[in-house]
Amino acid sequence: MSQARPTVLVVAAVIVEHGRVLVTQRMPGSHLAGAWEFPGGKVEQDEDPRDALVRELREELGVEVEVGAILDVAFHRYPGKSVLILFYEAHRRPGSPAPAVIDVAALQWRTGAELVDQDFPPADASILATVRRLLEGEAVPASP
Ligand code: DGT
Image (cartoon, rainbow, N blue to C red; front, side, top):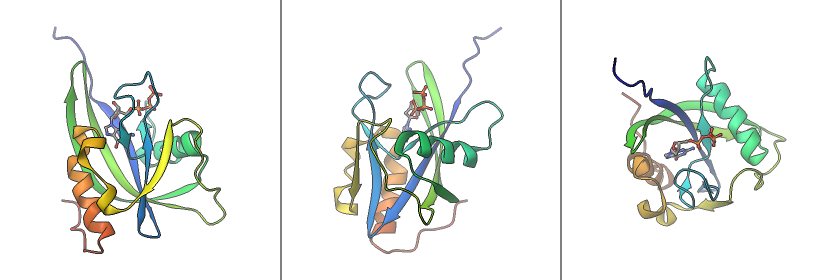
């Protein structure tokens, strides 16, 4: 029998406010420590991915969000594991607290010009291009 190494399902949020997107920095000691990313995390067994994203954003940043459409999907193999990442558009609900540094190393609101590929995991290359277009006001093609 081959060794079971299931693909990890990950959800991440693209939250845009006032022409900037919210990005967070991974905790020291975690996989890809210090990298910037779109906030989110692993989907638990039998969990609806949208519910997972609401849960992760509450845990990491203390925000309440409404999850919208999928903007992109990325598959990436790391040594030892592979991940399938669903990137969703999300919006803070009216009355939600502002994001706070709770279970992330840092947070920033970045413009398109500040979204530098080198700061992010390689798995994020495609979504970064999509978000830059989004921030520059171009129409983003619907997901396939
Ligand atoms: P933990 O630490 O076991 O509780 O795990 P979670 O649920 O916080 O999930 P996390 O963030 O460790 O796993 C996400 C994986 O996806 C990790 O290997 C990094 C990878 N990844 C690549 N790009 C992104 C991104 O833009 N956002 C997120 N959240 N993860 C990304």
